[in-house]
Length: 246
Image (cartoon, rainbow, N blue to C red; front, top):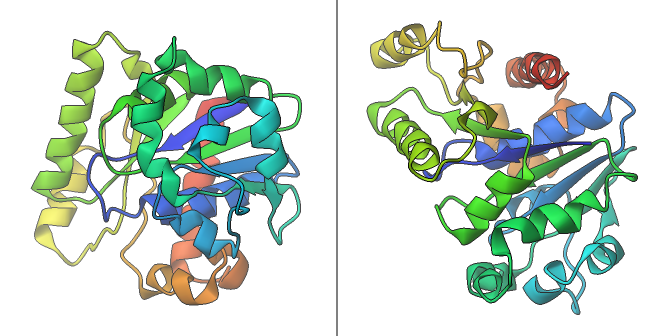
């Protein structure tokens, strides 16, 4: 089982769109795939037209794999399941802090699902908290969307510094450029500047109205508009990422 966290300290960088599209593409390889929506806003859950049951909450998420498994729901797509978010996830940091080994909790709970899934994707909230650290420990890859701007690059280096300062495994970190507009000089210059950086994938996701319309389609772009430029870009990104997972 491979675990991939779509994560960014900064919001509005295309994280959820990437989580939805990459998890869908992983499932198209006929590999059973799970996407865990960890963001209280529940955008991934919304895209897949799924809501959590009334009895499901953050406390049950931390109870263990049996509670998690009971609340996993099938999407409309073969080989792709979703663990929906709940508004109570805003309390996950508080509840994690009360656990004996908070940084190992998520990894332990989800490792028990390894017989069911080949891939698990996390759609993480945009902050740096105890939940984030638990996700870092549970993930094989921390995949960071970067807009080619100064502030977005700054948050990437902040994340790397956090890993260094806390003796975390920086080899887990991967990044890709998102919402790229090649007509902008700054975007072109920054993408070119990082073209030989090992942890930055070469495939980029363009700024596209089709990605914005995912909220109307309520489906992965590669299912709703597979011939669009953005859908083809996500497919190329997945193929590059998949190669790095082997």
